[in-house]
Image (cartoon, rainbow, N blue to C red; front, side, top):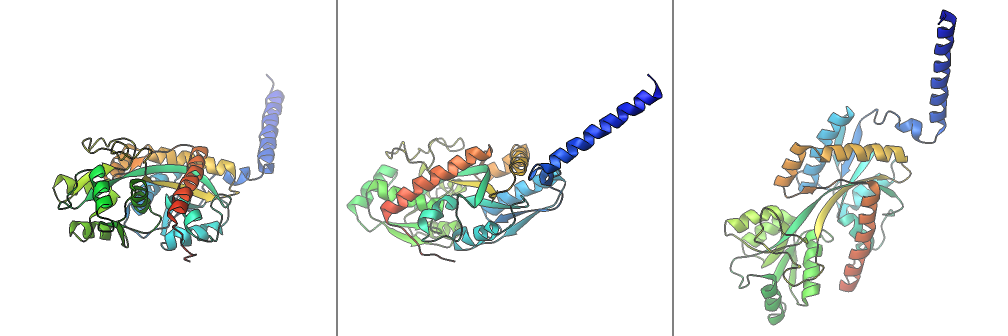
Length: 334
């Protein structure tokens, strides 16, 4: 082949490459995400540092830094049933560089709070559900019950005498307690605490009779400091197969867990959302990350944005019904 033909071929290839680049830049949003991320990414956590939510975000954030080759900054914005952080993110640019961590309460607030400063469904786009944390119903050792059925019977026979602890209204432990009281048809006195740690200290000291907590509290069951009556999810836990589920204990359809996920602003380009989703799924699949989270009682999941979106919508409908039946409503707490 002559030198002139080779030169002509190279020119043609360069023209095709240039044409492709021009075409890509003409597609709205695509040129932005072609090198995503090209600068630091923030994960906004609507809780204070040190809890399970914060630990999960930081663990995944470290892995995302490896995957992306960019810093991942964890920013804690606690308060007002997560509304402070959620409203903040709802006002940011839809560019994928500000990712909001959400939990079960994200789907509860639309029914719990009188007027939210954002729209849960239209202002945010789901990215991925990261994991779930089953709960466990635990009771003080001196309480004369050894099962959920006995607890319900005791509550019916002694209306208003049982006391139970809950953390912030709208959290999974709070919802689990309200669902038990509603489905069990008995009265008990609620004592509210600032968090699950304070609630657990109160239970260990005998200040309250029972509470729903994370599965790590089952270590107290093993040592005899508490009674483990049931787990809140639909299957028994591998580490504690002797503890029945709430369904097995006579409450059909009872399934409550804290779930953790990540969302971004709506109108974020779909290819950026997919890129974030793929990176999170890769981080979630890391064996070291999984082992660490398993020690904290969090089962990592992963999946597609559509799957997470379906979960959010179904949870909004479910808890809206429960809260309306229980007559639980808060004013705007900002």
